[in-house]
Length: 101
Image 1 (cartoon, rainbow, N blue to C red):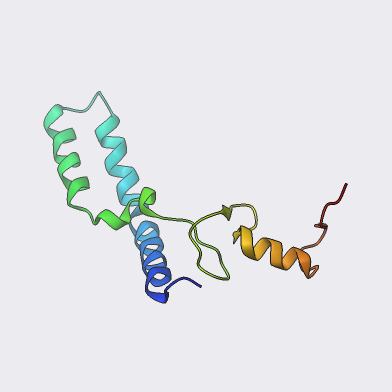
Image 2 (tube, rainbow, N blue to C red):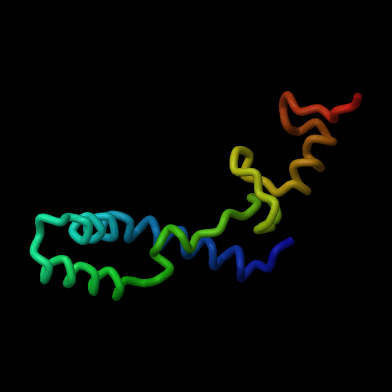
């Protein structure tokens, strides 16, 4: 089980990303638009740099929904490999069976 503080930190980051997503996208579009004057693009760059770092989507880290484990994460199921195997062994995941050959 991951520390609660780490899980809460990720939740807080996800909220920040969601809150600032529109503003960040707007500033990035201004920065990438070559038809705009250089001064306006530079001002947009400075505004983007002043935004909270945790509002960037690249700072999010996927975590297991049940345990909070950050490694060996399956995106499709939102679980770590350990919980995936455990739930599959108990028959909790439909269509998943232990393979044998």
